[in-house]
Image (cartoon, rainbow, N blue to C red):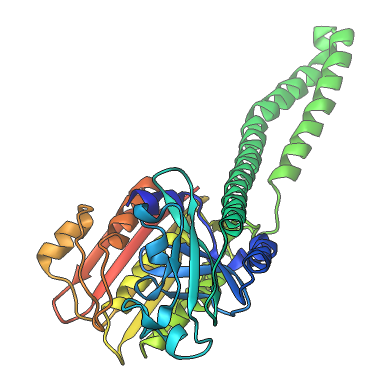
Length: 395
């Protein structure tokens, strides 16, 4: 759980990291003399290949991967399998019995610290290999650089959030000064209208300058606050790098989780409510939260079933909240299990096709939702599917 929380803190979009690591995956393969190299990040249910060289793969289930063993504490110096085809853990895997018919594996954990590994840098080949101690040491250096780049990604994300906060404060200040400045202008106009009676020519001249300055500041405040608004009164602009809209989130979820659904022959739908579909909002762990719920629904929905995601937003007086639902027609959840999940005490259980359960995904969701001051609602009956509803306030 601590490892998953650390991974979620980076708030990574696994599908957009290829450019960050492509040079390192290529270098790792060249150093090892192997056909394939991957940078894999492992969450509750899925191994995401953030970068690949020599093998076009984006994801696989965590339980099918070799790297799940590399991140174990006992393998902190590296994990090697000389022949996958005779190892009981891997000999029946698709990547062994089908193309690319892999035999050799060597993986190094991507260590955040002594206790936590975010995933693994691995090299693989169709032939037997033997890596020298020097080559393994060079691969460790490359793995450290991968982690450094992940840290840089987090630093940049935090900086972008700071800039966003600064813009929000700037707009708020501009809004707040309008009242006082308007009062100053009004007072100046009253005094000016009585100027001859007061016989304050020098004061009037000074007040005239105040009035002009006040109007300039008021115009500036109006300029800062004025944006292009649609008929619903909401700002229309393109989302920034650290933002989603409901439409971009819809596209991202389909790209990421369609392969899992297709593998299990499950219908996977993602629908975004049109009314507020183009309003930007911060990414802020949305993928981690929804991703775990979607993977969980796929896991507990049998072949031929359906998983549906509904994306909506409630907007009122510049306050936004996301209303997200993940529904399935799977095996359902008992009342006792619902209580455990909502209290952050979910326990492992296997999926409808025997997928291995780790007991972390829903606990992680619960933790992240509370951290965002949101609500997680769950309705289900045994053998009648489940519906997870999220209400997340947006800054």
